[in-house]
Image 1 (cartoon, rainbow, N blue to C red):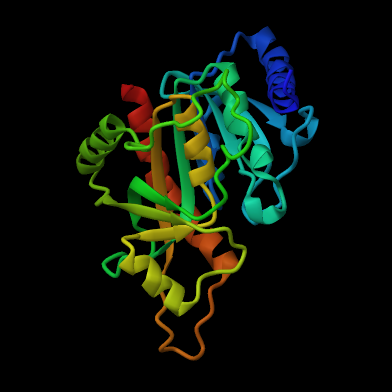
Image 2 (tube, helix red, strand yellow):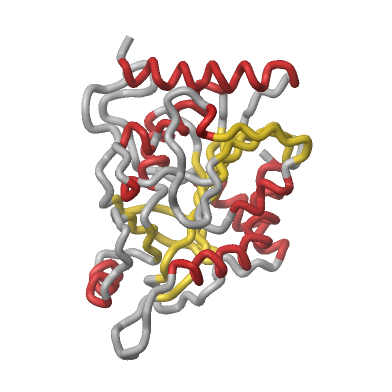
Length: 277
């Protein structure tokens, strides 16, 4: 067996053994970004599985990422939520960054919800906005480079609709019902860990980006490789700085605080969407 596949199946087997006594079979996967772990508090009768206990799993080192799977019930569905993701900038290779998504695939998820804290590139955005991701520009190494894992998907997967149009429409409908004032846009993914320079922000705007971050696209690519429908959301935690203020700095701790403040609204939206699919 391909060592990558063996690692995936070993991790999934461990999680299945933990969940089996409670009869839990997750159908929806959720990836919670920086400062957005509050949604996991809404999961009832939760089972926590620390990454460090899972064979072959690394631990998350990023600010605002706890490093556990939480499995339980949300809006009447069995979900598995990642409290903290893995990033390329932490030094992990792309097979490791996307390992949790393939493990969730083996566990049987039918939908994937991804979230992140992002910088606002679109000049009409404000701190605290929620942006439905409709497309992305990936500048993180593609996780499918290398020998294809044929049991997970084709060599050349289609990415015409990386974010499921039906889920986007449903989110817009629910967002209007809840009065959330949702934005829509394109997410630009870069490696980090540095924040963007003023001219990098300008470049991203020119090429069509509305928000920028250091995650998400590898997970989405791997999910779509396995034909899993994806819904993505960015919480705009800071806005593009054009360099006019000599005292301005991008503060990682403040970004987490802003994400935490917006997490209540994002949680309400995710719960409502999950309840209707």
